[in-house]
Image (cartoon, rainbow, N blue to C red; front, side):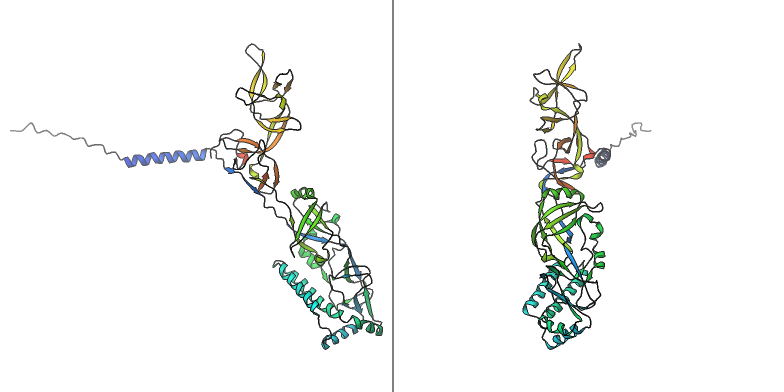
Amino acid sequence: MADNNNKVVAIKKPINVNLGLIFFLIILIYIIICIFMFFSSKHVTGYQVKKGSLSVSNIYEGIALRDEIVVTAGSAGYVNYFATEGEKVGTGNLVCGIDETGALQDYIMQNNESGANSLSEKDLSSIKNEMINFSTGFDEKDFSSTYDFKYAIQGDVLKFSNRNLLNSLEDLTSQSALIKLCNSPDSGVVIYSIDGYEKYTPANAKKEWFEKEQYEENKVQLINNNIVSIGDPLFKLSDSESWSILIQVEENRVQELVDEKYVKVKFLKNQYESWAKITPVDGADDGNYILLTFTNSMITFVQDRFINIELLLDSETGLKVPNSAICEKSFFIVSKDYLTKGGDGNDCVLRETFNENGQMIPESIPVTIYSENSETNEVYLDDSTLRLGDRIDMPDSEETFVISKSGTLTGVYNINKGYADFKEIEVLNSNEEYSIVKSNSAYGLVAYDYIVLDAESVETDEFIYE
């Protein structure tokens, strides 16, 4: 007999909830939303304003311009120099001799072999000092200066030796009419090189003058015992202690330097410092030139045409801001007499408006002052609440003014309060990347303010999400 009580009952399986998977999906959805918001929202980069100064390079390579006279040969032959380069000679002093036969050179060689032409301690000391000066200012990028130094040393040694023979020259020249002595036609400092810059003047300045490689190709060193022809250059005289250095400067620095009028200059060759008068030069092309005029130290640099200098200017200090943060904005200009105070103590103007009955009534409109001109008693007001053509009333007066005058201010966007708030700045100095602005001005910036790095990325009063 079958047992009807045996029934199969289906047992429902419990639902297994994978909490880890749910949390993973929630986090994934959150990340996707954040990524979408990141790429779809506008991002503004902030910059914290700090005090600083500009790293403006004041080092220049200039061209020395002097009053120079080139003395030429009146006869042909071998030239022998007796005056030391860089030495000051008087009118009529002996500088060199021209030997048509070579007898003078033979006489010099005989004296050298006999030891009569040994150098004195003073001469050796002079050569030693010249070697020290060369090694101190040597630049590996300008190896051509080594050859100038070589010729200078060779010339000095020969001229020191020749100078010891001056007592015998009178007897030698009396024996031979073919030896011509060359005296200085004027007083000045002797130079034994010709470079074509002797007649250059600042008014004819050109950029090509500063091409040093071309200069080295054209420079001629006047070497002892060379053969010269009639009319060839013998030596050069610089006869004035007043001289100048011509430099090329950036266009935006011309007025800055001109305003200084005088500047202290450091010569990098020997660290010597001297004051120079600043004069702007137009030149013969579109270059920007400054002439630095000195009244001393000419003899120290008489052998140098290109001189490396540093202008010792007082660096401007203030708040340092990137140039990308600086912008310009237009504002309405209103007389300060039209301002009044609202119930909350803030600045307001009384704008004429009409009520429902068509009656004209003054409406208090809050305004923000962005700058003030104390000379004209005018203020710069934002155009967010006022409109062109609005008529405003002067408090306690029947005078009215129609909003029409506008002006432009230079400034940055301050984001301390979470929105782009324009602040006027006064730029003191600038270079390609940064500007130094005046700190603690009435409507400007203070140290540690946050500003928008790129002024073009925001608009006035826009909320900022960094």
